[in-house]
Image (tube, rainbow, N blue to C red; front, side, top):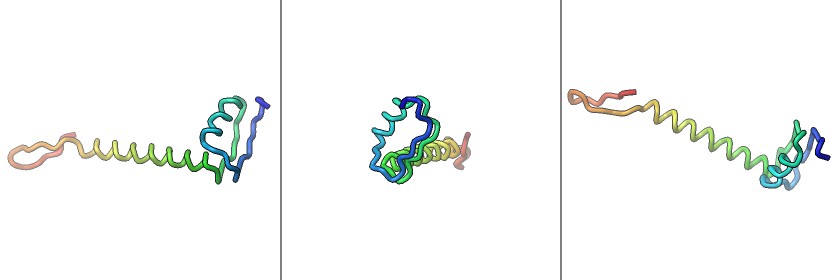
Length: 77
């Protein structure tokens, strides 16, 4: 079973933790379907969190450092 290449666990009660264990135990796994499972939801939440973190970092970078020069606020990048 370690040579398994495709796995369909669509609409099962697969948890994120169990899915991570399966990925470790099945090194030849190339395709998997985990839609409508807790593992899929966890993956979506993690990806969304990463995307938000990147957006926040980029926004703070774009704002730069504000300084007062000649009585006016100026953005320095």
